[in-house]
Image (cartoon, rainbow, N blue to C red; front, side, top):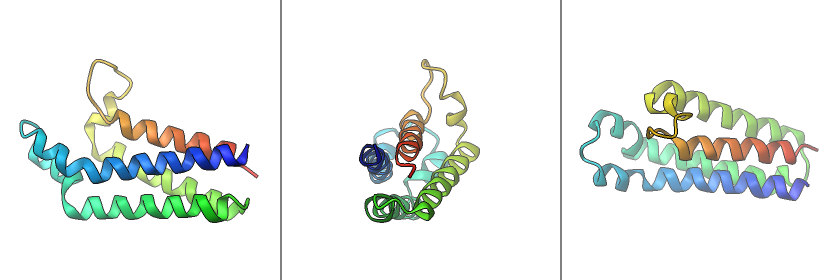
Length: 124
């Protein structure tokens, strides 16, 4: 069960990495959206920071969490909570994520939920 949890966690962080690396292209493809909002996610600093967090999450999942070390689980949970709280408080689109008829940050929320499920399955 731990291997499935670790795999889900790696998939969640890979999705976060993909979302982060493709945000500059998304910003260029949607010039009608608010440029200030897109700059929060598509400028080089947020992309580099989110990518670094995602790579660190993958490394924590593959090495210490797979071995069952509890500190890695708590560190992963803290990383996901920090990402979630930061995104929800800074992006108004995340508040409409439960409404399927409006665009929000569905991909981000899905990645965080998959990550938390992976952590629950990887619990030693």
